[in-house]
Length: 305
Image (cartoon, rainbow, N blue to C red; front, side, top):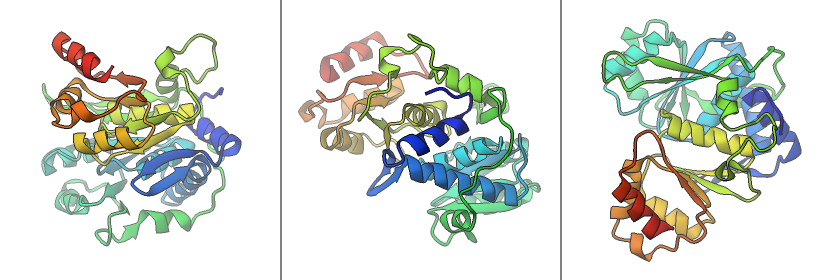
């Protein structure tokens, strides 16, 4: 697979393996063909709202496969997805929405009220679109998306174009928007096709199933989803990290890869059922975002393998 942009990658998968499952969310499955077409409709919808190349759009909500569809739609027109930490207080959410100058926000279930609270502090905000948010918002994402054709936009894209803007935690001051380009995101997952550039745990293996359990407002969640999109494999998406559900999915699905921060690994090992679970189908746990204590590393290797 050779591509300079994430938009090009989803187009290639949509054509070459349209029936392969890209995301599983509860009982719902989204194939690469559906993800490609849905993101093209979203791209046309964003263009109809006047969204320009380089403009930031935002998402406030728990993990959902349609977050990635919107991100891919934005990527197809050179707009930049900016997910917002749903655990933040209203003034903090308002700061980020104002700082990234977003006019369009997509909200998940339970978060439309937060947008109502902060709207007067974010005068630039024009459109609120709900992703499976019931009747909380005036505009439902699926209905909005399906009004538009699944045609490709003619916006010229390069690997230098911004793709994603994630905010730092703001421990030493105001959160800062960290910008990642198509090139910076894809270089770490080697979509360039150069031989020997991937580590064994990065190699795409047909039939791989990844558990996406970390939050998408963080690179651990969004990065995991982008990784499986590039690899052309399936992510099972949890709305938020739940060790009981994670263990159930490891037992009942052929999950081969998981990314967890060290604290989440510790929570998993502390679970009363961890001693009963068969981890033999799990090939890799990758971790990051903080150092891992040696004792935790050893305990995880002893229990999980």
